[in-house]
Length: 200
Image 1 (cartoon, helix red, strand yellow):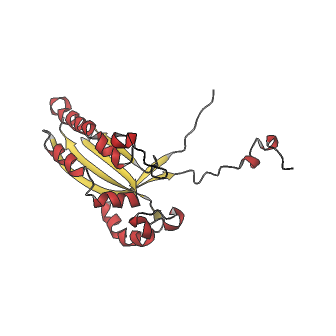
Image 2: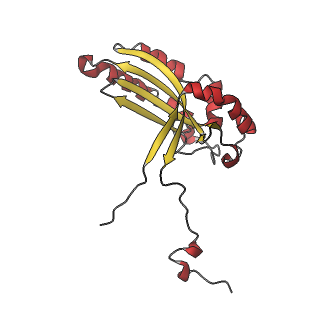
Image 3: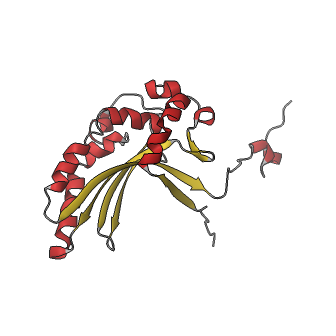
């Protein structure tokens, strides 16, 4: 029986205050990237401190929920998320709503490892969180729209009985691969090398 082993990965989060201090350097690094183009990341990856590089930024919407009435507040928060899922997923270019039938060419605009929406629920601390992650250039563009639909979502969240401490936070969010860079061999160097046609 074959066993699949997956390399461990961790999400590295950097608080907003450090992110804000690093912004002038980020702007200088990305240059045209913040104006719409995406420069090669290998040459422009911004750094908060030596060795603390990042390419993605996340926006977190969070609150506390009450245990009362069989966690009625949590259930209502989930219903709110479900009702606004199309608006929220559109931010990360998911194939929902108008984008599900668009004829626009989206090559290079979608990367599931860098554009995603996650829900976090902790029943010990009674936390309900939504995290929206984007590459820095796309995040900056979203920020200019006041993180639409953030205001609508948070306003509705505050109206739910049993919900408290509604807040937002911005931080960098990176996947850390402990195995390092994986080298993929060329076909000519792999196990099938002997079966490849030889040049005449």
